[in-house]
Length: 345
Image 1 (cartoon, helix red, strand yellow):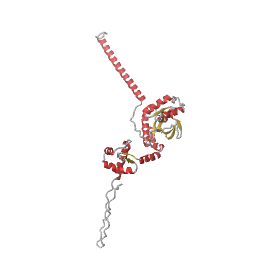
Image 2 (cartoon, one colour):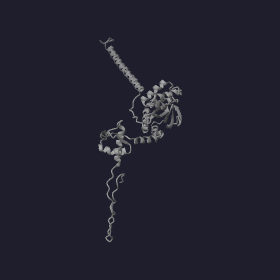
Image 3 (spheres, rainbow, N blue to C red):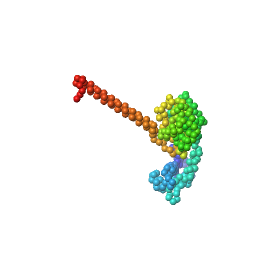
Image 4 (cartoon, rainbow, N blue to C red):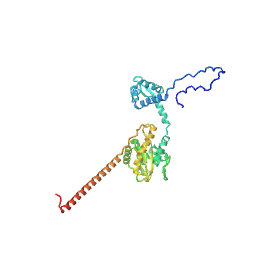
């Protein structure tokens, strides 16, 4: 059995016996036994845990040695030993007066090198294909180039009908789900720039009123995903979610698109959270710190549920009243039969 760490022991001597006629073999130097190498990977993991702790808990002053030791369940001397090479590599720095730890400029250099190597299309490729495999509809990836979105990737559906979109195509942000998913998380000035560029209708369902667009973007923020309900192409519904960069700015979006016969309102509500989660997964790889939210209903969904409950309660009350009236009529009928048509006292 081989091991990644450690040194193999000396090989066993040959089992062949030596004859007496042969001169005795000169004693050979035996290899000096070496101590078992310490598992450096374990120390590395604990050092990285110290680095992660400083990253997550340090404020403007840093984080104290005591807190690191207590939170990680190790001694202060161990923290100092693990932090020493991190300080040497400028990944950590320690205040000479307070002894508190902060991230060093080496961490910034690593982050910049990581971000410079990222490409949204390559990062999103696998998640986009997994999503397409699950939902069975065409998936798109876009970046924002105000006031438009630009399609940079497309994974076709498994049906015969193809979407008219193509990689490299530009579309106005206001009338697409991907565009609204991005605009919902940009500033008012960005949205105003889109409005100033014109809200020209593409279909009879295209939003052309700035107030309606603002209300639509608010719904996107509440639900976590945007919907294009035949606003850009007749008989096509799209569901989209934003993609955030390391500054938590919405820089792109992904979507699921399909014919209305397949992308029904019920299907949209099912697919929406899946698209949102995929967008946040891609965002985390791009350096975003936005957490994955717990599923929350939009105000429209809540109002719809309340209306449904109210209608259900009304129907229940009506059924109860009807049953009560029926029982009363039945008792009255029996009383008429028993008492010759007179009323019960």
